[in-house]
Amino acid sequence: MTKSFEVKTGIRQGCLLSPFLFLLVIDWIMKTSTSEGKHGIYWTFRMQLDDQDFADDLALLSQTQQQMQEKMTSIAAVSAAVDLNIRKGKSKILRYNTACINPSTIDGEDLEDVKTFSYLSSIIDEQWR
Image 1: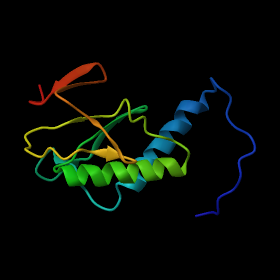
Image 2: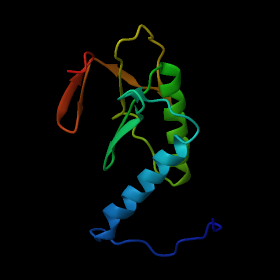
Image 3: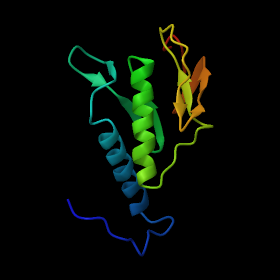
């Protein structure tokens, strides 16, 4: 891996490379922040689903509140390292089949618990319908 270097020019708004470079950065953030362990949900017997990503919309999936908190903290730290911030006002927590009511936080701010959530124009509720 090479040493970091200062970037003196950027990509112009509307450049065809902009979305591609953004996706590369998001992919790097997700791989770097979740590399320590799998904390997703079991999709099949041998496959875990850790997150759903589409452009700048991320849905994180975890078995426990503690795993979710660790995942969010890690993603926030890695994102901050490349000057990207998580918009806490747009971030929501949808709990499924849990009695845990501990608040989930990013940078010390509690995230809102919701009963339904819209992700990519689909409305998801606590029963995953």
